[in-house]
Length: 469
Ligand SMILES: Cc1ncc(COP(=O)(O)O)c(C=O)c1O
Image 1 (spheres, rainbow, N blue to C red):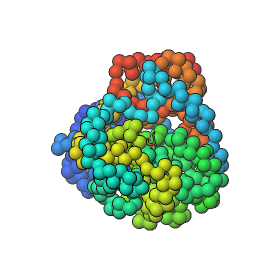
Image 2 (cartoon, rainbow, N blue to C red):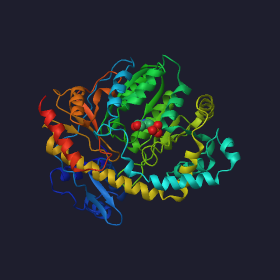
Image 3 (tube, rainbow, N blue to C red):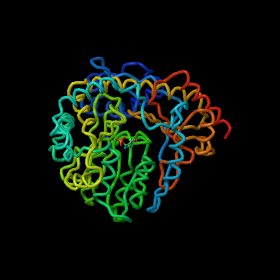
Image 4 (spheres, rainbow, N blue to C red):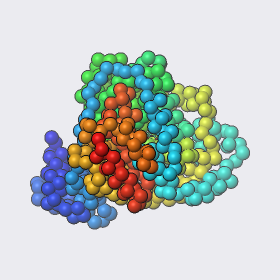
């Protein structure tokens, strides 16, 4: 354990024991540095880690405080899957049947993959759409199709720059959501039958992409807090001809895990050593709860091996279908592949987002959104504590809007899913996140919608159903 990890552990213990109570201020960086005889940067690193672990939060100009639900009764889950042999993927039927049943607008949407539309500045975006279109010259509508709207590309490149990444605009390919970016990226570097390293559990659509492209999955276990198991990844890279990795280094879906900076650097070291490209799915990049934006693996990418895929679907404009890929050395190939498939995302949608990024107050909206998601997370964690059976384990991610729940082994989450739907509550059952249909006693719950008495009752219903197993 490094010194900052040790120090973070000491503070975490004080929080769990209740010595540092919810809402209480923890020692300032200066006080802690003096008192514990460690450098301010070590304290900063420790506080950053604790923020990521969802235990503390920074308040502007006031210091760091213990989060309200930090001292909870329920434990966090650990790794619950063993590495398996490369597998062909067949999940689509199960995924489609689950997704179909989530369509009913009258259910409490704990199974949904999107936050509530109420949390997005839709009318402000509509004004941006009108202005963006007024300012679009007829020539541009056609000319910008291949490269993407230049203002949007500039705005995205600017955001990379603020995050410390100097990105040539040529590297950016605008796509129909991150999903297209990820699909094209994988098509660029694989052929049917190739092996692709993915996370276990993984975002179900990544499994469907592998299935569609006839690729085999090499599942790498993910720890809900630490992220992907780098030792297992290295052993697999050394032994198997893996052609690509598809990972989320930050707020992994469904676990919410984020890799530390050091582990991101180590992961990039592995990519370089084994000359393997990586699709970095970073659609939740803006939804961190802490005070510091996380840096992606792309930050370390001095050889262009990382295709960093982002999107506005989860943080600004659901339904606009605008995403992008910073494609590194693969950018020209990605651009051609996009031309050969969908040509271009809608120019009006790109113009609207470009205008919004420039004039709409994006950062203010993001601050509000993060705040809402964090409060909703606290409400869901507290409700789970009240209603779920002993032995349930829950993640506590430092951002996003998903909780991963590991129920006692006797619970079958597919059966629970059907029982809950009958009672008007949805959830995302564990097996849809696995190439090998693992995680039977797990589920993903979304707190992406404003918390109401109905949400509380839905948690109570889930608790009653769980008691019947
Ligand atoms: C992890 C992850 N990656 C990619 C996507 C797709 O993003 P987009 O809507 O931009 O295509 C999603 C959406 O659910 C997601 O959760």
